[in-house]
Length: 307
Image 1: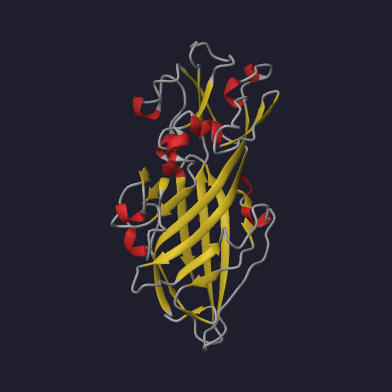
Image 2: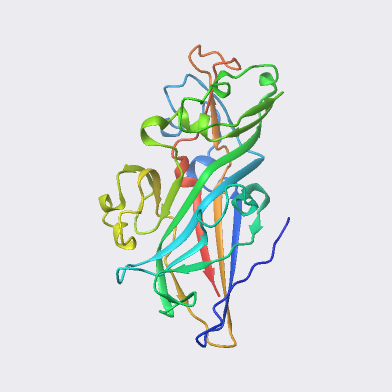
């Protein structure tokens, strides 16, 4: 496991040092769906789709890589310009920056440059006690590598041969024998109309008791989220709003002391991809369909530890 050191701190205004650690990982079977035995006889109706033909099997990616766009914490708005804490910012990093590409399956820990935005002085928050109530997590894409059943070794899967030239997004999928390297575009395209709703890129955590997938014009359509955003630049389009987050408070350490903040983003990839027999309802043929398991958006968990 490759671990890159990272630290950044507010050393002015008689504050101590704050060290930030950002880790990505996968879990095995923590979600309700992941814990179930995946065969035709043991799956309940609400864990299967009915429109894709007979269920064949479920697959767990051996690699799961995210291209991260944004990670930002927001406090409750107390003025026109709240102090947001940004760990990864789309505006400050190029699309090819290696910081963006993280291997969840390898428990990756990466270097970032945290930035306080809003009411700050020389890059440090004016308020020494800030409670962050919302986390924004944006991903340009997720790419997974899976081993298919051996019956697919010589099967040309039409789902991954589609030309996306006329669409907003470009897919990058490669199948070699029974090894499939695929991003999330063709998988999501079977579940949602991406041309009308846009790609699923954004995840918001906090201020809700449930986890759901949503389509709204702006954050003003969601009263519980809107207070964290001073303008209408919050959630828009196709996004997940998750309860799997606990509010946390940043108490600036006094001079000579160190505060450690450890943030883990964990995705349950166990049996994440389900395989169905497609239109002909014959397994292991070219029209078989690969989709994320129902309620896949519930599989992401955020944990922030301050010590």
